Amino acid sequence: MKSSFYRTALVLGLLSAIGPFAIDMYLPALPAIALDLKADTRLVQASLMAFFVAMAISQLAYGPAADMYGRKAPLYAGIGLFALASVGCALAGSIETLIAFRFLQGLGAGAGVVVPRAVVRDLHTGPDAARLMSTLMLVFSVSPILAPLAGSLLIEFSNWRGIFWAVMLAAGAGLVLTAMALPETRPPAMRLQSSLGSALTGYAMLLRDRHFLGVTLIGAFGMSSFFIYLANSSFVLIQHYELSTRMYSLAFSVNALAFIGVAQLNGTMSRRMGLARVIGIGVTGCSIMVTSLFLLSLAGIDSLPLMAAMLFVGFGFLGLVVPTTVVLAMELHGRIAGTASALMGTMQLVTGAAMIALISRFVDGTAQPMLGGIALCALISASIAFFTLRGRASHVTQQAPH
Image 1 (cartoon, rainbow, N blue to C red):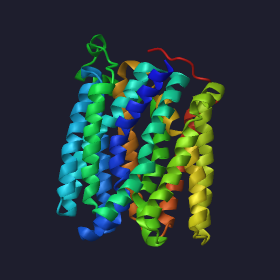
Image 2: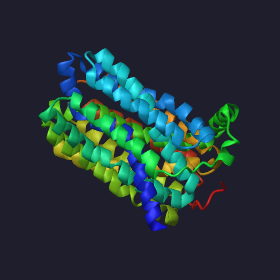
Image 3: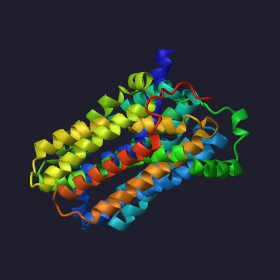
C-alpha cells in the first residue's frame, strides 16, 4: 500500500514537472536570449508570460476533457503538443517567433497541471490528500532544484537553444510514463455523468462558491509571489549582483529546497491542526518575512546574503500554503475534480501573469521592484486568508464525500 502511494506520487510529480521544467530550465538563459535575439528585458519576459497565459487558458479545456474522456487522454494530447512546440522554440530566429511557440508550449503544458491534481482527488481527500499532494510536490520540486542548474550547464556547453531540445526529450519521457505507469482513475461509468454542459454548469457553480474562490485566490497570490521571483531573479542576480549562471542556479535551488522541505510537514500538521490553520500559519509567516525584506530594501539595505536568507524563510512558509490550498479548495468537488482543478489552475496562472506584467513596469535593474511585488502578493494572500478562513481555524478536515 505504501509502495503504491509513493509510486503514484512519483509518476504524478514527474508529469506535473514537465511544464515547470520548461520554465525553470529557461530562467538562466533569459539574459543570453535577450542578447542573441536582440530583444529588451520586457520582450524576453513576455515569452515567459505567454507560457503562463497559454497554460492558464488551456486548463479550462483540459479539466472538463479529463472528466469526460478519462485522465490519460488529455495528457497524451497536451504533452504531445508541448513536445512539438519545444522544437519550434529551439529553432526560433526572433523573439516574436519564440513568444509564439512558447504560447503553444504553454497550451500543451496545461494538461500536466490539471490532470495530476484531479488524480489526487480521485484517490484521496482531507489530510491523506494533503500528504499525497505534498509528496507529489517533493517529486515535482526536482524541477526548481535541478532544472536551473541543468539549464546553466547547457548554456555553457551549447547555447540557450539546447534547453528546448532537452525539454522535448522530457516530454517524450512523460508520454512513456503516461502510457506505462499511470493508472486510469476515472472509470467509464463516471465519465457518463460528464459533458460540455455539465462542465459549464460546474464552472458556474464553482464561480458562485465563495469558499472555493477564496481558497484558490489564497494559493494564487501565494504562487504569484514566487512567479515574480521566477520572472525577475535571473536579471537581478546575474546582472545586478553579478552572479554567474551556475551560481544563480544554485541560489535559485536553495529557495526551492525551503519550499519542498516545509511542504512535507503538511500531512502531519493538517491532521493535528486542520487545513485552514496550516494555511493561516503559512501566509502569516511568509508575508511577515518578505514584507520585512522589502522594507529593508526601501531603507537602502541592498545585501544579497540577507535577501537570500529572508527569501529562504519566506518561501519555506509558502510550502505550507500551496499544496494545502489545492486540497482544501477541491475537497467538496470530487465529482467535477477535473473542472475544479482547471479553474483553480487558470486562476493561479492568470493571477501570476498579471502580477508579472504589473511588476515589469517598474523594473529598474535593482532588486527593489521584485521584492515589492513579492511582498504585495504575500500581503494580498494573507488578507484573503483572514476573511476566507475566519471561523474555520479550529476545523480539522476529515474525509469529504466523493
